[in-house]
Length: 91
Image 1 (tube, one colour):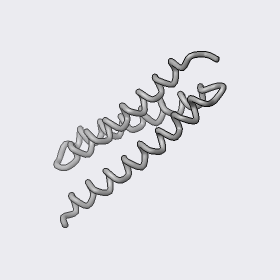
Image 2 (cartoon, one colour):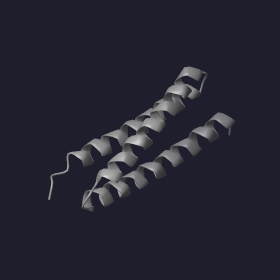
Image 3 (tube, helix red, strand yellow):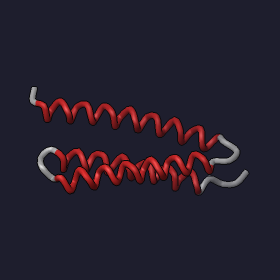
Image 4 (cartoon, helix red, strand yellow):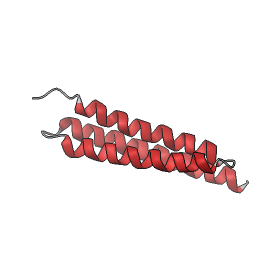
C-alpha cells in the first residue's frame, strides 16, 4: 500500500469521525436553551477547516488537491450546521 493511499484512508476516517462528532454537537446545540456557543464553535471550526483546505489546494501537488477538496467539504458542512442552528426557532 502506498503512502498516499494510507494518508487518504486516514484522512477519510478522521473526517468521518469529525462528522459524527459535529452531528452530536448539532443535536446538543438544538436541545440547548442558548445555542450561541455551539454556533460559534461550528463557525470557527468550519472556517479553520476551509483555511486548511485552501492551503492544501494551493500546494496542489497530488494528492493534496483531493485532500483539500475533502477537507473543504467538511468545513462547509460545519458552517452549514452553524447556519442551521442559528435559524433554530426561539422557545
